[in-house]
Length: 212
Image 1 (cartoon, one colour):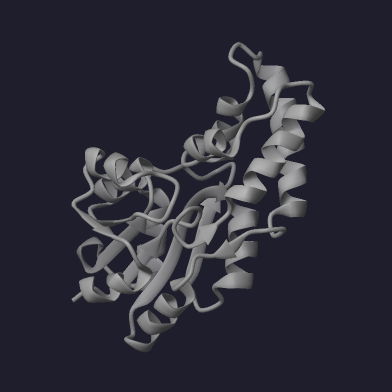
Image 2 (cartoon, rainbow, N blue to C red):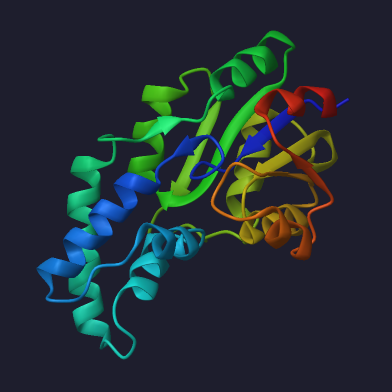
């Protein structure tokens, strides 16, 4: 039996795509660049917001202009990250049910740490801890923040599941020595998850309870 579940955030617990795309396009237009479609932004998510903007700006944009565009994105997103963002159906019930079983829960995300903590405090107050990216931390697929979460949860790698929606999450779980569960309602397709090495996929949050 597992004693903890560590979740990715974007595309796993929260549908953040609309707000991310809105802030991406605000920044792009502010810098005189063409907008990106929702589907494009969906494929750019997963490696953190710096990489999100790197993929969003036109190819060949110099580093200084890219940084300016990122700063516009960051400021806009921190003000508008809750405009349309909401938990996926069944997620809050899952977290509540895990807590009732004595299973610890945490979030490890490549999102900005301030955004991660703010969104989790609002939507998932039952979580034990939540980690995002700071200037000092390593982005997933580094296992560094997963190890921090495991320490706070008081469990070993083999006692936890890692739940995510992308190839980055598959790699993160592998690097941390955790069993990985891929969710099919997020930002990557079933085919991408399987080709990235995911062995277990779920179509509904409540299915995760059966894997504990």
